[in-house]
Length: 392
Image (cartoon, one colour):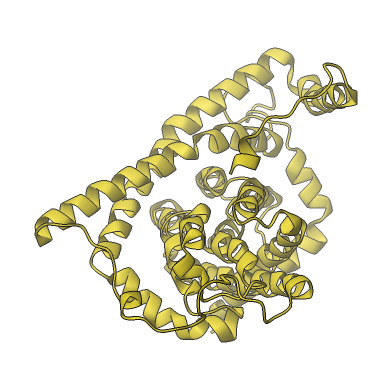
């Protein structure tokens, strides 16, 4: 973490300054040329405000509720039970020890970095070989924000006018497939460097059963006090998570929406929220011969959701209701979105810091490449599985 926070110095004027200046001009000048400077700035502010009031607060409410439920499930042993049930699947599916199932559960109930506290615990690391340990980043990220993504998609039933539960379940299954591919690809890279025999925690015996391994930490007090404490603490963690996604939603989502939407219905730019230059649909339309068979997108606009999920899963969720209301997406898209938003869950913004925290900076490139492939496979799998489900 110190490496992440450490500041460096550069010359006051170096090539980076001029390259960045050209990049900013190249990004915003075409938008200004199409929309006009005044309209662009007004749309920028109005879209950000609308997202804050109508999307961020909604996601925040969901995060608080799911955080409270997650803490309650953990307090009374449901998470431990899920860990026991999932453990036998970990080695044949992911090539990881059963203890990694706890990372799946914790990240699914919260976010990608939730696996880092586990990774810092030597009693957790003792179950891993050295080549398996870096793959925790790929495993945790593939399930990060899973509960929030699934709950949010479920809340769109009324807008969609149909039952989205099958699509969400298929999306979760697609994410699992993507996570297996991502983790296995990462293990192929790490085993070439570390081999298969070196333990991760050298000073501790490997895979030794101890009585204290079968206990869990709980709050002190009566059952009622424990339940209230869990609900309040979990809700507070939901607040932290909900507040943490605000920059991603407002910055990333606003920019993506401006690159996705077109002018007002009249064809004239007014500076209102959600106007844009429709660049991404134009690009997606050119690539539709590839995107349609792979992901089954209903319209080119749908590509904006997985693109945004690369940087922030919370921001990508903010794009779904407008697309659904406008009739640009359907249940099949929801299945693909659930898989890709959950599997990718903003890995471009978390993978680097997570790998640094695990002292695996030399494997950042392998982790990113593996997870890119895994996320694409998750979307493809969800599309194929949902179409198969419709046939049945």
